Image (tube, helix red, strand yellow):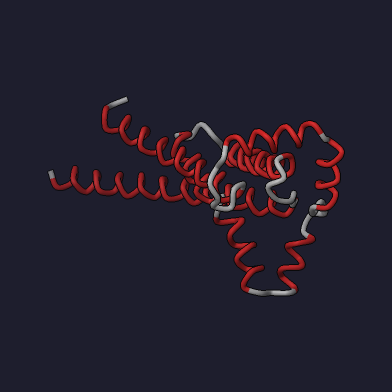
Length: 174
């Protein structure tokens, strides 16, 4: 791997780390400060009382498309922001996966990784009492991740074709 390519990979990885930090900050902490002591207490409470976690899970949305349908039938600024936001917040994840993986991850792999990360965040909200579990968030987040992945793959392919065309023109003029 040449220096330029290595630097490119390092920059994308740093962007990935910053994105993951921001994602956790937005989804779990709703832009509040991250207090490790409070987080630890919440974890102890959540793990110490599985019954309370189960109650919180049951009070969340466990029926696929229920909140999505409700949002589509009762359109408001909040519902549009919620739907679009849950898709868009995961699009960078898919894009960064595509750029970091360098053709080692398929669309199915990106879908599974997006679903897994979203499930971890929803589970953390549940166990840490930082929000409610919503299966529709899993669907929307996963959709955003796969869309971002596909857009990035398309752009990379487009960039390679443009580079090939430019090289071909340069060689034709030489």
